[in-house]
Picture 1: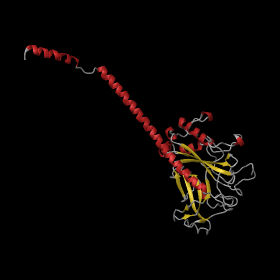
Picture 2 (picture 1 turned 120 degrees about the horizontal axis):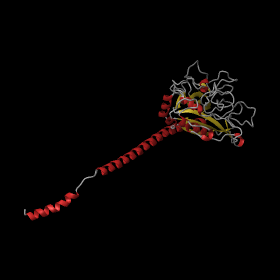
Picture 3 (picture 1 turned 180 degrees about the vertical axis):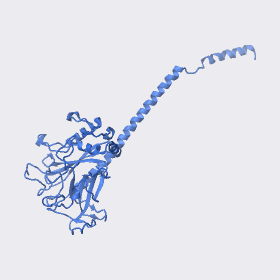
Picture 4 (picture 1 turned 60 degrees about the vertical axis):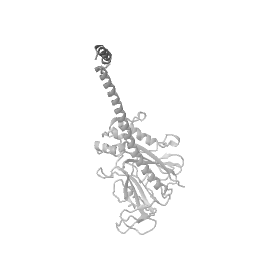
Length: 363
């Protein structure tokens, strides 16, 4: 190749070789720094999304369970026998040892009182006897939160009884559970009373007695409370109008004729949250349930001195999540119940409160 041409070719290559260079160290550091920030932001978003999804799943669990429990109650209440010649075991001023006396945060029920309300009544829903599986045209329905011992698989879980009965028949032979018991009219009662000292169905009013007719329908329901909406518009813990019937001490002769609806409130926790609380202390969940106030009629509040529907549930949420207006620090903030037992705050966040009122459509 001629020397002149070679010189021109080399001359044209030199500028290209001069501009072909890599990244500097500073540029690489800046790029890595930006990449790290992007990765951290994406990871934070993924973590937040996971936490939101986990919380949403917990709420779906509790929502589903509460819906099933309250729908089951709706069927039972809809077919309740509303008569004056049959017995009821419901909250009232006499012959009732369920939760009561309006205890509040940090105060356990008095001796002899139970941790949650109980209710028992006759209903025209089908009842089944487990050994035989044969349905009956009527049943004794009862709801309770089992309060036997912490070793009981049903402990602090909502149970329902649907004991099979018949309208007419012969008494059972001995203790033969396959022989259905006949329907009982007053003076025969569900629980022991002055008129019927033995009570026909004592397990229906016990929070711990074993009975094959009980089944757990709310494994996450650890607190149950109910109260009454009367036909005069008052909300009370006495199932009759104390103004028009001041001499009454029981439902004898009046039944539930003064009651427009029964309002049921439940507290539900998901399985993972319950496991955390049980691991913290065997008594934590019971203490937490005891912190949730009873319903108690409060003279002097509102028209007629009655609570409004939702007042008690609002205070329950204050016990769990805090409410400065009520002087409640909130278990989720302190990590302790009113009795001083530990409760993981994350488990408390999974607890949901539900209520529903069931119209009795009584005359």
